Length: 187
Image (cartoon, rainbow, N blue to C red; front, side, top):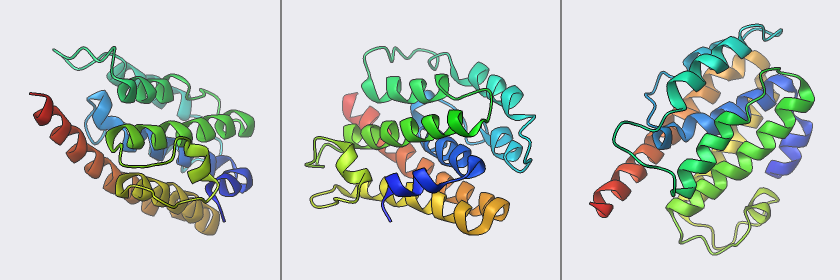
């Protein structure tokens, strides 16, 4: 099943986890530490989502400003990551998280393409629909992680949150290494 189909079939918790996982993997671009989104993950265990808005505001407060000494205004990857955070809905309504999860999926794949331009497809839409020929390893891994998160939540409900977080953590480590390598190359 394609990523687009998985997003279309996902429930509210799966959609919120999908968007959050994309954002979590991109935290290295925002200068955040590994724990900054942990409260948002914890809020997903609650079916009501009462803590989501408060945890989101807390995360925004920690991630909104560029890291000290960094001017990220011209970096498209950073701008896409900031947009994911800015567009996160305070209300975990199905319509709101569906639009956010979809936008995060596209943004995260675009970020990975920007960081590994070896991918020969101009549009991430083709990747999300299942056309994977010529995909770079970094983009392929991101696509697999997005699919894995949605499948974990669809197959295990709330019990899929911990493995989904582990998938996001693995992706964050990979992206942190790519960002670090990129910063060294620019120096």
